[in-house]
Image (cartoon, rainbow, N blue to C red; front, side):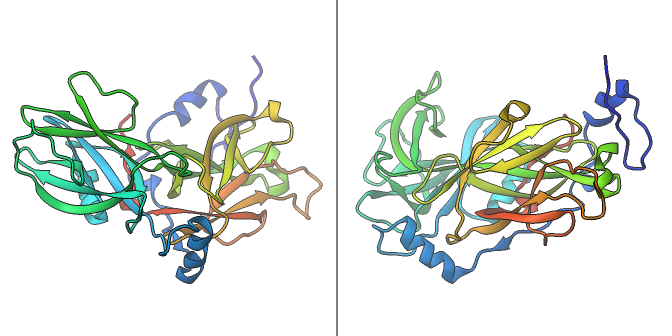
Amino acid sequence: MAYSIHHDEQGRLIDPEKLLVATDCPETLSKFIEKWRDPFMAPVLDGATASKYIWPDLPFTVKLIRVDVFECNSPKSQQATTDMNLSRRLRKNNTMNYLFTFFVLNEGYSFTKLLHLETAGPPRRDRFRIDGKNNVRDLTEWQLKESLHAYVTSDRIAGTKYFYIDFCDTPDRYFLSYKSEAEAGLRRMYRFAGYPVTQYYVLEKRVVHDCLAAEGGIGTTYYLSYGNTCKTIKGWKIINSFFAFDLQLYGSNLYTVYVRDDPFKRMMILMGPIPNPEEWQVFCQFYAFDLPIPGTCSLEVHNCTRSIYSTAASVPRHRLTNEEKRNPWEFQFGIYVFPVYLDDCTFADNW
């Protein structure tokens, strides 16, 4: 079997047989987060202009409201919130698991309905209740936390999908799901529509490799991870995170992340097909805007360029960052996504 040549951060040769052990293991959390950079928010005035372009039928400036949903396994129950401070406390609670996030409108209109978020306890649990709907089997006294504005339907509303409210008694509990069928033991009650999103994590690694002669033998590579948690992988560092849409809204663009592992892990982010597609794998796709909407932050895609000081070819790759461009990186295009701060991330450092 032929092996490519790999080096560690000090330039020492790595035994190919030990590559799996050297890279496929957890990193300490303090090292993993040491290069984190907080997001830069988009201008408010520009966002108001974009809101009229994306939601032309709405007479108000749309600022989407983020809703985080958590689940407790013992006893099984759910909690949800739009309060970011409460969301961060729930993330730090070892008994709670972060499930998913969705967005709703900040104001009501003719095709929305009030969605009440209510709480009860013990055990502490929340429920979503559509205004005017009551479950006669539910005997628990619920206290109103807040009211949201959800879509009545996802039909002909770009970027939305249905979320379902399921019920279980003894004690009375409700579970929010996006699955088409209720789980065993649960009764499907109501549904509403919102904007589903996924959390993405941008990872950076310092690489020493012979193929980086155009960059002096040392460079950086970038990769994306996504999901409810981010693994703290040895040698990698998280630099930022963001939420992006799962479905296409009016005016949004589809971004495809292509990856490959040779001569090291790297990625390309494009709005169209990639040259030589047989050499790359499609890793993930998400929707984002190229203009600022209210509540978003800006990120830039940079392309690694060929050095003017060397005849050696550069290794093509992209990075997604809020840093200023610098050699060997040049600006490719910008995107606007929803910001995530370090306290909004859940890390798996014991996998």
